[in-house]
Image (cartoon, rainbow, N blue to C red; front, side, top):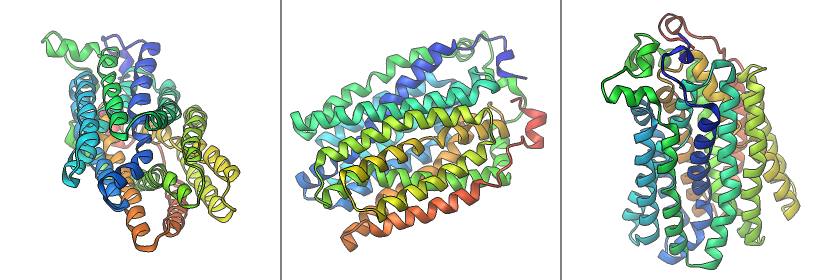
Length: 417
């Protein structure tokens, strides 16, 4: 049964895309600015780069580890309560990031609370709503628009965060962002799905029950026994490694090479701007081409882009070109990855199964953030991490290439596309 065939009226497409995109814009935009705080916070507290990197690495790991459970909650109860919980957790985490002077407290707030908040307010939850309310023909394009919004958030919020840092103390700037994060809560009303509201009042069943008899545990067991799902999951590890390393450590890498701090802000903003184009294009192409081929091409082009960057003389021009090229490839993996999960396993458990794949992404993020800080403290350079990121990109390109996107036999019988 198609989700749109349900007796429950889906969320209007314009409302769905506006509220979903705005939520991702806020959540991802704030997250992408955290690299700007590495040096102010480490200098204020006398910490090493590894100390700061560890907190953000744990943030990525918590975000990923909580994803399947948060996804199960959103699949079962709808996104509304999950998004409100995320807004509150985000604000509390940023408050702790601004006021905590002890490293353990910093890890618990910046790492654990913000990690949980991101799990509640980003792609795992939003794509579940999109999958339940958009037809299969429109799904990849709708996910591309939503992913592009996350990139626009980076383009928007990184300069805002930089401006705050230049006009007030770093802790006051974080308090402003904490207040901003609360905007996610009211936007959640636009993603309140009628079938879940009706179910909670006892007058109807959740939409998930209309899709067949497969339970969450059966869906998870089926996915974990599916070769192509595992290949997709393995490739996504590389995406997390590369993005977390570059997003957190690029500002310090440029400063280490005596480039002006404004260049780092410009580079991160350019990554966000160009990924608006890349994410939308990847989603649109996913409706016409094999999504596994698109993913393979993205990872290969990332490796080439990084190779050219580390081999070329470092200048404002090379940084700008790198940011534009990498930005086009930045979150463009997100729409085809999630669309493949929906195509192989249906939409009933999309948030949960997408969360499992994303957990692999966040293990990669943990390694990319922490290992870069660790190796820098040991060697005084990021050179080894750059070469590791390049090699992993080539590996991910080869892993994604043979993925077949057909639905598994069990899913054909139990869950509609």
